[in-house]
Length: 511
Ligand SMILES: [Zn+2]
Image (cartoon, rainbow, N blue to C red; front, side):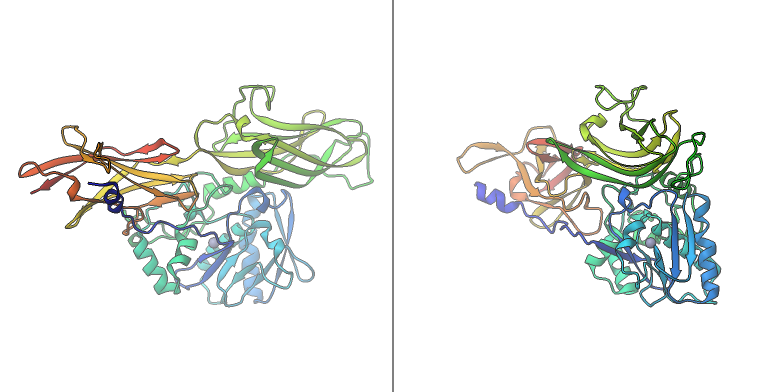
Protein backbone atom coordinates (compact mmCIF):
# COMPACT_ATOMS: atom_id res chain seq x y z
CA UNK A 1 0.00 0.00 0.00
CA UNK A 2 1.54 3.31 -0.92
CA UNK A 3 1.31 6.80 0.44
CA UNK A 4 -0.58 8.16 -2.53
CA UNK A 5 -3.27 5.67 -2.03
CA UNK A 6 -3.50 6.59 1.62
CA UNK A 7 -3.97 10.23 0.71
CA UNK A 8 -6.58 9.34 -1.82
CA UNK A 9 -8.56 7.63 0.87
CA UNK A 10 -8.74 10.73 2.97
CA UNK A 11 -11.62 12.42 1.29
CA UNK A 12 -13.64 15.15 2.80
CA UNK A 13 -16.74 17.05 2.11
CA UNK A 14 -17.63 20.67 2.21
CA UNK A 15 -16.12 22.66 5.01
CA UNK A 16 -17.75 25.66 6.48
CA UNK A 17 -16.61 28.68 4.56
CA UNK A 18 -16.11 32.11 6.08
CA UNK A 19 -18.74 34.73 5.52
CA UNK A 20 -18.44 38.10 7.13
CA UNK A 21 -21.17 40.48 6.25
CA UNK A 22 -21.17 43.89 7.78
CA UNK A 23 -24.91 44.23 7.80
CA UNK A 24 -26.76 41.24 9.11
CA UNK A 25 -30.45 40.99 8.67
CA UNK A 26 -32.73 38.45 10.14
CA UNK A 27 -36.29 37.54 10.48
CA UNK A 28 -38.21 39.05 13.30
CA UNK A 29 -41.81 38.01 12.91
CA UNK A 30 -42.41 34.57 11.61
CA UNK A 31 -46.06 35.51 11.24
CA UNK A 32 -45.70 38.71 9.30
CA UNK A 33 -42.67 37.49 7.31
CA UNK A 34 -40.68 40.57 7.94
CA UNK A 35 -37.03 41.24 7.54
CA UNK A 36 -34.80 42.73 10.12
CA UNK A 37 -31.42 44.33 9.74
CA UNK A 38 -29.01 44.48 12.60
CA UNK A 39 -25.48 45.70 12.42
CA UNK A 40 -23.19 42.76 12.94
CA UNK A 41 -20.83 42.22 15.81
CA UNK A 42 -22.01 44.93 18.13
CA UNK A 43 -22.10 45.39 21.82
CA UNK A 44 -18.50 46.06 21.41
CA UNK A 45 -18.30 49.00 23.74
CA UNK A 46 -18.31 51.33 20.77
CA UNK A 47 -21.96 50.65 19.94
CA UNK A 48 -23.02 51.75 23.39
CA UNK A 49 -24.30 55.26 23.85
CA UNK A 50 -22.65 57.42 26.47
CA UNK A 51 -24.19 56.56 29.79
CA UNK A 52 -26.75 59.14 30.88
CA UNK A 53 -27.53 60.21 27.31
CA UNK A 54 -30.83 61.71 26.29
CA UNK A 55 -31.46 60.19 22.87
CA UNK A 56 -33.61 62.15 20.48
CA UNK A 57 -36.21 60.19 18.50
CA UNK A 58 -38.15 61.40 15.48
CA UNK A 59 -40.89 59.71 13.46
CA UNK A 60 -40.72 59.61 9.68
CA UNK A 61 -44.43 59.01 9.12
CA UNK A 62 -46.85 56.79 11.01
CA UNK A 63 -50.11 57.50 12.81
CA UNK A 64 -50.43 59.19 16.18
CA UNK A 65 -51.83 55.95 17.63
CA UNK A 66 -48.64 54.10 16.67
CA UNK A 67 -46.47 57.00 17.85
CA UNK A 68 -48.10 56.74 21.29
CA UNK A 69 -47.51 52.99 21.41
CA UNK A 70 -43.87 53.35 20.43
CA UNK A 71 -43.32 56.02 23.09
CA UNK A 72 -45.05 53.89 25.71
CA UNK A 73 -43.04 50.73 25.12
CA UNK A 74 -39.73 52.44 24.36
CA UNK A 75 -39.96 54.11 27.75
CA UNK A 76 -40.14 50.74 29.51
CA UNK A 77 -36.36 50.62 28.98
CA UNK A 78 -35.92 53.96 30.78
CA UNK A 79 -36.71 52.31 34.10
CA UNK A 80 -33.74 49.99 33.77
CA UNK A 81 -31.21 52.05 31.79
CA UNK A 82 -29.73 55.45 32.56
CA UNK A 83 -30.97 56.65 29.17
CA UNK A 84 -33.88 58.88 28.26
CA UNK A 85 -35.76 59.09 24.99
CA UNK A 86 -36.78 62.57 23.89
CA UNK A 87 -39.33 62.38 21.08
CA UNK A 88 -38.97 65.42 18.84
CA UNK A 89 -40.89 66.64 15.81
CA UNK A 90 -38.16 68.52 13.97
CA UNK A 91 -34.43 68.53 13.58
CA UNK A 92 -31.69 65.95 13.78
CA UNK A 93 -32.46 62.87 15.83
CA UNK A 94 -30.34 60.00 17.14
CA UNK A 95 -33.07 57.49 16.25
CA UNK A 96 -35.40 57.92 13.24
CA UNK A 97 -38.39 55.62 12.96
CA UNK A 98 -39.81 54.71 9.57
CA UNK A 99 -42.72 52.57 8.46
CA UNK A 100 -41.75 51.46 4.98
CA UNK A 101 -42.13 47.89 3.62
CA UNK A 102 -38.61 46.83 4.61
CA UNK A 103 -39.79 44.93 7.68
CA UNK A 104 -39.06 45.29 11.38
CA UNK A 105 -35.50 46.24 12.15
CA UNK A 106 -33.17 48.62 13.90
CA UNK A 107 -29.55 49.53 13.83
CA UNK A 108 -27.76 48.59 17.01
CA UNK A 109 -26.70 51.41 19.31
CA UNK A 110 -24.51 54.17 18.00
CA UNK A 111 -24.25 52.55 14.56
CA UNK A 112 -27.26 54.71 13.71
CA UNK A 113 -24.88 57.68 13.74
CA UNK A 114 -23.57 56.47 10.42
CA UNK A 115 -26.97 56.76 8.75
CA UNK A 116 -28.03 59.91 6.93
CA UNK A 117 -30.55 62.03 8.82
CA UNK A 118 -33.24 61.61 6.16
CA UNK A 119 -33.16 57.82 6.52
CA UNK A 120 -34.68 55.75 9.26
CA UNK A 121 -32.56 53.83 11.75
CA UNK A 122 -35.51 51.73 12.91
CA UNK A 123 -38.49 50.46 10.94
CA UNK A 124 -41.94 49.06 11.62
CA UNK A 125 -43.60 47.80 8.49
CA UNK A 126 -47.37 47.98 8.45
CA UNK A 127 -48.02 48.87 12.08
CA UNK A 128 -51.61 50.03 12.24
CA UNK A 129 -54.64 50.45 14.49
CA UNK A 130 -55.38 46.77 13.99
CA UNK A 131 -51.96 45.46 14.98
CA UNK A 132 -52.51 43.39 18.15
CA UNK A 133 -51.20 44.99 21.32
CA UNK A 134 -48.96 42.03 22.10
CA UNK A 135 -47.24 42.32 18.72
CA UNK A 136 -46.72 46.07 19.18
CA UNK A 137 -45.30 45.48 22.63
CA UNK A 138 -42.83 42.69 21.92
CA UNK A 139 -41.69 44.26 18.64
CA UNK A 140 -41.12 47.76 20.05
CA UNK A 141 -39.35 46.44 23.15
CA UNK A 142 -37.15 44.30 20.91
CA UNK A 143 -36.24 47.04 18.42
CA UNK A 144 -35.47 49.55 21.16
CA UNK A 145 -33.26 46.90 22.72
CA UNK A 146 -31.28 47.00 19.47
CA UNK A 147 -31.30 50.79 19.55
CA UNK A 148 -29.62 50.62 22.97
CA UNK A 149 -26.99 48.27 21.58
CA UNK A 150 -28.35 44.80 22.35
CA UNK A 151 -28.05 41.94 19.88
CA UNK A 152 -29.89 38.76 19.11
CA UNK A 153 -29.82 36.35 21.99
CA UNK A 154 -30.42 33.30 19.78
CA UNK A 155 -27.08 33.98 18.10
CA UNK A 156 -25.22 33.94 21.39
CA UNK A 157 -22.08 31.80 21.22
CA UNK A 158 -23.07 30.47 24.62
CA UNK A 159 -26.45 29.14 23.50
CA UNK A 160 -25.46 25.77 21.95
CA UNK A 161 -28.70 25.64 20.02
CA UNK A 162 -28.43 22.54 17.86
CA UNK A 163 -30.05 23.74 14.69
CA UNK A 164 -31.35 21.19 12.23
CA UNK A 165 -29.71 22.95 9.35
CA UNK A 166 -31.67 21.44 6.40
CA UNK A 167 -34.96 22.22 8.15
CA UNK A 168 -33.85 25.73 9.03
CA UNK A 169 -32.81 26.33 5.41
CA UNK A 170 -36.12 24.95 4.12
CA UNK A 171 -38.10 26.93 6.67
CA UNK A 172 -36.58 30.29 5.78
CA UNK A 173 -36.59 29.53 2.08
CA UNK A 174 -40.32 29.00 2.27
CA UNK A 175 -41.00 31.89 4.64
CA UNK A 176 -38.55 34.50 3.34
CA UNK A 177 -37.09 33.17 0.11
CA UNK A 178 -33.66 33.23 1.70
CA UNK A 179 -30.63 31.46 0.28
CA UNK A 180 -28.63 29.10 2.48
CA UNK A 181 -25.93 31.72 2.75
CA UNK A 182 -28.43 34.25 3.98
CA UNK A 183 -29.83 31.83 6.55
CA UNK A 184 -26.28 31.15 7.73
CA UNK A 185 -25.66 34.85 8.18
CA UNK A 186 -28.92 35.65 9.84
CA UNK A 187 -29.95 32.65 11.86
CA UNK A 188 -27.25 30.01 12.23
CA UNK A 189 -23.98 31.89 12.63
CA UNK A 190 -23.18 32.85 16.15
CA UNK A 191 -21.85 36.15 17.28
CA UNK A 192 -18.22 36.25 18.12
CA UNK A 193 -15.99 38.32 20.32
CA UNK A 194 -16.89 41.65 21.79
CA UNK A 195 -20.57 41.04 22.05
CA UNK A 196 -22.94 40.63 24.94
CA UNK A 197 -21.55 37.88 27.06
CA UNK A 198 -23.87 37.54 29.90
CA UNK A 199 -25.29 34.08 30.33
CA UNK A 200 -27.48 32.75 27.57
CA UNK A 201 -31.00 33.94 28.29
CA UNK A 202 -33.75 32.19 26.31
CA UNK A 203 -36.37 34.44 27.92
CA UNK A 204 -34.68 37.61 26.62
CA UNK A 205 -36.81 39.99 24.56
CA UNK A 206 -33.87 39.82 22.14
CA UNK A 207 -34.44 36.09 21.47
CA UNK A 208 -36.54 34.94 18.55
CA UNK A 209 -39.05 32.16 18.95
CA UNK A 210 -37.71 28.80 17.79
CA UNK A 211 -39.99 26.03 16.66
CA UNK A 212 -38.95 22.64 18.02
CA UNK A 213 -38.93 21.19 14.51
CA UNK A 214 -35.94 23.38 13.64
CA UNK A 215 -33.58 21.88 16.20
CA UNK A 216 -31.96 18.46 16.44
CA UNK A 217 -33.16 17.88 19.98
CA UNK A 218 -36.55 19.57 19.79
CA UNK A 219 -35.30 22.60 21.69
CA UNK A 220 -37.79 25.41 21.33
CA UNK A 221 -38.31 28.96 22.54
CA UNK A 222 -41.69 30.62 22.60
CA UNK A 223 -42.46 34.28 21.92
CA UNK A 224 -41.02 36.52 24.59
CA UNK A 225 -43.11 39.59 25.24
CA UNK A 226 -41.49 41.17 28.31
CA UNK A 227 -38.04 42.29 29.32
CA UNK A 228 -36.47 39.34 31.12
CA UNK A 229 -34.58 39.63 34.38
CA UNK A 230 -31.43 39.16 32.29
CA UNK A 231 -32.39 42.01 29.95
CA UNK A 232 -32.93 44.35 32.89
CA UNK A 233 -29.66 43.36 34.51
CA UNK A 234 -27.62 43.72 31.34
CA UNK A 235 -29.05 47.07 30.29
CA UNK A 236 -28.64 48.35 33.84
CA UNK A 237 -24.98 47.43 33.74
CA UNK A 238 -24.49 49.03 30.34
CA UNK A 239 -26.24 52.19 31.45
CA UNK A 240 -25.96 52.29 35.23
CA UNK A 241 -27.66 54.82 37.44
CA UNK A 242 -25.11 56.13 39.92
CA UNK A 243 -25.19 58.64 42.69
CA UNK A 244 -23.43 61.73 41.60
CA UNK A 245 -23.87 65.38 42.40
CA UNK A 246 -25.80 67.34 39.79
CA UNK A 247 -23.63 68.59 36.96
CA UNK A 248 -22.86 72.27 37.36
CA UNK A 249 -23.33 74.40 34.30
CA UNK A 250 -20.05 75.47 32.74
CA UNK A 251 -18.90 78.76 34.19
CA UNK A 252 -21.00 78.39 37.30
CA UNK A 253 -18.69 77.26 40.06
CA UNK A 254 -18.64 77.31 43.77
CA UNK A 255 -15.86 76.29 46.10
CA UNK A 256 -18.36 74.47 48.27
CA UNK A 257 -19.92 72.56 45.38
CA UNK A 258 -19.01 68.90 45.15
CA UNK A 259 -16.91 67.74 42.25
CA UNK A 260 -18.85 66.40 39.33
CA UNK A 261 -18.02 64.80 36.05
CA UNK A 262 -19.58 64.58 32.63
CA UNK A 263 -18.28 61.44 30.94
CA UNK A 264 -18.72 62.29 27.28
CA UNK A 265 -17.34 59.29 25.54
CA UNK A 266 -15.57 56.04 26.29
CA UNK A 267 -14.16 53.89 23.52
CA UNK A 268 -12.76 50.41 24.11
CA UNK A 269 -10.52 48.90 21.48
CA UNK A 270 -9.62 45.22 21.53
CA UNK A 271 -6.57 43.51 20.07
CA UNK A 272 -4.50 46.65 20.16
CA UNK A 273 -0.77 46.12 19.68
CA UNK A 274 1.51 48.18 21.91
CA UNK A 275 5.20 47.51 22.43
CA UNK A 276 4.86 44.04 21.03
CA UNK A 277 1.94 43.06 23.26
CA UNK A 278 -1.73 42.70 22.41
CA UNK A 279 -4.14 44.29 24.81
CA UNK A 280 -7.14 46.51 25.43
CA UNK A 281 -7.13 50.24 24.77
CA UNK A 282 -9.50 52.46 26.71
CA UNK A 283 -10.04 56.02 25.63
CA UNK A 284 -12.09 58.35 27.83
CA UNK A 285 -13.25 61.87 27.17
CA UNK A 286 -14.64 63.62 30.25
CA UNK A 287 -15.10 66.98 31.91
CA UNK A 288 -14.51 67.42 35.64
CA UNK A 289 -15.96 70.38 37.45
CA UNK A 290 -15.45 71.90 40.89
CA UNK A 291 -12.24 70.02 41.54
CA UNK A 292 -9.67 72.72 40.86
CA UNK A 293 -6.20 71.69 42.02
CA UNK A 294 -7.47 68.28 43.08
CA UNK A 295 -6.37 64.86 41.94
CA UNK A 296 -9.02 62.73 40.30
CA UNK A 297 -8.81 59.24 38.81
CA UNK A 298 -9.96 57.59 35.61
CA UNK A 299 -9.99 53.84 36.23
CA UNK A 300 -10.98 50.64 34.39
CA UNK A 301 -11.87 47.62 36.53
CA UNK A 302 -11.85 44.11 35.13
CA UNK A 303 -14.27 41.38 36.18
CA UNK A 304 -15.50 37.98 35.15
CA UNK A 305 -18.93 38.34 33.57
CA UNK A 306 -20.44 36.99 36.81
CA UNK A 307 -19.00 39.94 38.73
CA UNK A 308 -15.96 38.49 40.48
CA UNK A 309 -12.93 40.77 40.02
CA UNK A 310 -9.88 39.50 38.14
CA UNK A 311 -6.98 38.96 40.51
CA UNK A 312 -3.56 40.47 39.95
CA UNK A 313 -0.40 38.41 40.47
CA UNK A 314 2.53 40.61 39.58
CA UNK A 315 1.73 44.15 40.77
CA UNK A 316 1.83 45.60 37.27
CA UNK A 317 -1.78 46.65 36.83
CA UNK A 318 -3.45 46.35 40.20
CA UNK A 319 -5.49 47.95 42.91
CA UNK A 320 -4.74 48.13 46.64
CA UNK A 321 -6.89 45.08 47.19
CA UNK A 322 -5.07 43.00 44.57
CA UNK A 323 -7.50 43.19 41.66
CA UNK A 324 -6.67 43.92 38.05
CA UNK A 325 -7.19 47.58 37.22
CA UNK A 326 -5.64 50.13 34.93
CA UNK A 327 -6.03 53.81 35.64
CA UNK A 328 -4.57 57.25 35.53
CA UNK A 329 -4.50 60.11 37.99
CA UNK A 330 -5.32 63.52 36.58
CA UNK A 331 -5.21 66.94 38.18
CA UNK A 332 -8.02 69.35 37.41
CA UNK A 333 -6.32 72.66 36.68
CA UNK A 334 -9.50 74.64 36.10
CA UNK A 335 -12.95 74.92 37.58
CA UNK A 336 -14.05 72.92 34.56
CA UNK A 337 -11.35 70.78 33.00
CA UNK A 338 -11.64 68.62 29.93
CA UNK A 339 -9.62 65.40 29.87
CA UNK A 340 -8.85 62.86 27.24
CA UNK A 341 -7.25 59.84 28.87
CA UNK A 342 -5.87 56.84 27.04
CA UNK A 343 -5.23 53.62 28.93
CA UNK A 344 -3.75 50.35 27.75
CA UNK A 345 -3.50 46.97 29.47
CA UNK A 346 -1.88 43.93 27.83
CA UNK A 347 -4.08 40.85 27.80
CA UNK A 348 -1.40 38.91 29.68
CA UNK A 349 -1.91 41.28 32.60
CA UNK A 350 -5.46 39.95 32.99
CA UNK A 351 -3.75 36.75 34.27
CA UNK A 352 -6.17 34.33 32.66
CA UNK A 353 -5.73 30.63 31.98
CA UNK A 354 -6.02 29.09 28.53
CA UNK A 355 -9.62 28.98 27.39
CA UNK A 356 -12.60 31.24 26.91
CA UNK A 357 -13.26 33.98 29.40
CA UNK A 358 -16.40 36.04 29.54
CA UNK A 359 -15.38 39.34 31.02
CA UNK A 360 -16.56 42.83 31.63
CA UNK A 361 -14.80 46.12 32.15
CA UNK A 362 -16.30 49.00 34.10
CA UNK A 363 -14.83 52.47 33.74
CA UNK A 364 -15.34 55.09 36.44
CA UNK A 365 -14.13 58.57 37.32
CA UNK A 366 -13.40 59.34 40.99
CA UNK A 367 -12.83 62.63 42.75
CA UNK A 368 -10.11 63.27 45.34
CA UNK A 369 -12.37 61.82 48.03
CA UNK A 370 -12.57 58.60 45.97
CA UNK A 371 -16.25 59.17 45.31
CA UNK A 372 -17.44 57.82 41.98
CA UNK A 373 -18.53 60.88 40.04
CA UNK A 374 -19.18 59.15 36.71
CA UNK A 375 -19.42 55.62 35.36
CA UNK A 376 -19.40 54.50 31.74
CA UNK A 377 -21.27 51.26 32.37
CA UNK A 378 -20.12 47.70 31.91
CA UNK A 379 -18.79 46.57 28.57
CA UNK A 380 -18.85 42.82 28.13
CA UNK A 381 -16.32 41.03 26.00
CA UNK A 382 -14.88 37.59 25.43
CA UNK A 383 -11.21 36.98 25.78
CA UNK A 384 -10.09 33.80 24.14
CA UNK A 385 -6.75 32.51 25.17
CA UNK A 386 -5.97 29.85 22.56
CA UNK A 387 -8.41 27.50 20.79
CA UNK A 388 -11.19 26.00 22.85
CA UNK A 389 -12.75 22.76 21.72
CA UNK A 390 -15.86 21.02 22.97
CA UNK A 391 -15.93 17.26 23.70
CA UNK A 392 -15.61 15.33 20.42
CA UNK A 393 -18.25 12.72 19.67
CA UNK A 394 -17.63 10.40 16.71
CA UNK A 395 -20.58 9.71 14.46
CA UNK A 396 -19.98 6.89 11.98
CA UNK A 397 -21.72 5.37 9.01
CA UNK A 398 -20.84 2.71 6.47
CA UNK A 399 -21.20 2.38 2.72
CA UNK A 400 -20.01 -0.34 0.35
CA UNK A 401 -16.40 0.80 0.41
CA UNK A 402 -15.74 3.01 3.39
CA UNK A 403 -16.33 3.68 6.99
CA UNK A 404 -17.25 7.35 7.31
CA UNK A 405 -16.02 9.04 10.45
CA UNK A 406 -17.72 12.31 11.36
CA UNK A 407 -16.47 13.94 14.57
CA UNK A 408 -19.05 16.20 16.11
CA UNK A 409 -17.62 19.18 17.98
CA UNK A 410 -17.48 22.93 18.32
CA UNK A 411 -14.24 24.84 18.17
CA UNK A 412 -13.74 28.44 19.22
CA UNK A 413 -10.96 30.91 18.71
CA UNK A 414 -9.43 28.95 15.85
CA UNK A 415 -10.75 30.92 12.90
CA UNK A 416 -8.38 30.56 9.94
CA UNK A 417 -6.07 28.33 12.00
CA UNK A 418 -4.49 25.35 10.21
CA UNK A 419 -5.84 22.29 12.01
CA UNK A 420 -5.75 18.55 11.36
CA UNK A 421 -8.36 15.94 12.08
CA UNK A 422 -6.66 12.59 12.72
CA UNK A 423 -8.30 9.20 13.30
CA UNK A 424 -6.15 6.46 14.94
CA UNK A 425 -7.27 2.87 14.35
CA UNK A 426 -6.75 -0.19 16.56
CA UNK A 427 -7.95 -3.70 16.93
CA UNK A 428 -10.38 -4.16 19.77
CA UNK A 429 -7.56 -5.61 21.94
CA UNK A 430 -5.54 -2.39 21.59
CA UNK A 431 -3.06 -3.47 18.90
CA UNK A 432 -2.64 -0.75 16.29
CA UNK A 433 -3.90 -1.42 12.79
CA UNK A 434 -0.86 -1.17 10.51
CA UNK A 435 -0.02 -0.85 6.83
CA UNK A 436 3.14 -0.63 4.71
CA UNK A 437 4.06 2.85 3.53
CA UNK A 438 5.69 3.81 0.20
CA UNK A 439 9.11 2.80 1.55
CA UNK A 440 7.92 -0.55 2.71
CA UNK A 441 7.95 0.44 6.36
CA UNK A 442 5.23 -0.61 8.68
CA UNK A 443 3.10 2.26 9.93
CA UNK A 444 0.26 2.58 12.36
CA UNK A 445 -2.95 3.48 10.59
CA UNK A 446 -3.81 7.14 11.15
CA UNK A 447 -5.92 8.98 8.61
CA UNK A 448 -5.67 12.74 8.69
CA UNK A 449 -7.15 15.73 7.00
CA UNK A 450 -6.27 19.40 7.24
CA UNK A 451 -9.04 21.93 7.72
CA UNK A 452 -9.48 25.57 8.59
CA UNK A 453 -12.42 26.76 10.74
CA UNK A 454 -14.20 29.65 9.09
CA UNK A 455 -15.70 31.29 12.15
CA UNK A 456 -14.73 32.38 15.61
CA UNK A 457 -17.13 29.70 16.75
CA UNK A 458 -17.40 26.83 14.28
CA UNK A 459 -19.63 23.81 14.75
CA UNK A 460 -19.00 20.57 12.85
CA UNK A 461 -21.44 17.79 12.10
CA UNK A 462 -24.30 19.06 14.24
CA UNK A 463 -26.60 19.28 11.22
CA UNK A 464 -27.85 16.60 8.88
CA UNK A 465 -25.03 17.13 6.38
CA UNK A 466 -21.40 16.36 7.09
CA UNK A 467 -19.21 19.38 7.57
CA UNK A 468 -16.07 17.38 8.20
CA UNK A 469 -15.74 13.76 7.15
CA UNK A 470 -13.07 11.08 6.88
CA UNK A 471 -13.73 8.30 4.39
CA UNK A 472 -11.60 5.30 5.36
CA UNK A 473 -11.47 2.35 2.98
CA UNK A 474 -12.25 -1.13 4.28
CA UNK A 475 -9.05 -2.20 2.47
CA UNK A 476 -7.12 -1.00 5.48
CA UNK A 477 -8.79 -3.48 7.79
CA UNK A 478 -7.96 -7.17 7.53
CA UNK A 479 -10.97 -9.25 8.49
CA UNK A 480 -9.27 -12.15 10.21
CA UNK A 481 -12.15 -14.44 11.02
CA UNK A 482 -15.81 -14.24 10.25
CA UNK A 483 -15.84 -10.81 11.84
CA UNK A 484 -13.28 -8.50 13.43
CA UNK A 485 -13.78 -5.76 15.98
CA UNK A 486 -11.94 -2.46 15.69
CA UNK A 487 -11.86 0.78 17.60
CA UNK A 488 -10.55 4.26 16.96
CA UNK A 489 -10.36 7.73 18.40
CA UNK A 490 -10.16 11.06 16.66
CA UNK A 491 -8.08 14.02 17.63
CA UNK A 492 -7.75 17.64 16.52
CA UNK A 493 -4.16 18.78 16.13
CA UNK A 494 -2.76 22.29 15.96
CA UNK A 495 0.97 22.95 15.48
CA UNK A 496 1.72 19.33 16.41
CA UNK A 497 -0.26 19.44 19.64
CA UNK A 498 -3.49 17.61 20.29
CA UNK A 499 -6.03 20.22 21.35
CA UNK A 500 -8.95 17.80 21.60
CA UNK A 501 -9.44 14.04 21.61
CA UNK A 502 -12.54 11.87 21.42
CA UNK A 503 -13.21 8.74 23.41
CA UNK A 504 -13.02 5.29 21.79
CA UNK A 505 -15.52 4.39 19.11
CA UNK A 506 -15.94 0.75 18.06
CA UNK A 507 -17.07 -0.96 14.88
CA UNK A 508 -17.18 -4.50 13.58
CA UNK A 509 -16.38 -5.60 10.04
CA UNK A 510 -17.82 -8.87 8.70
CA UNK A 511 -16.26 -10.91 6.00
ZN1 LIG B 1 -33.91 41.84 16.24
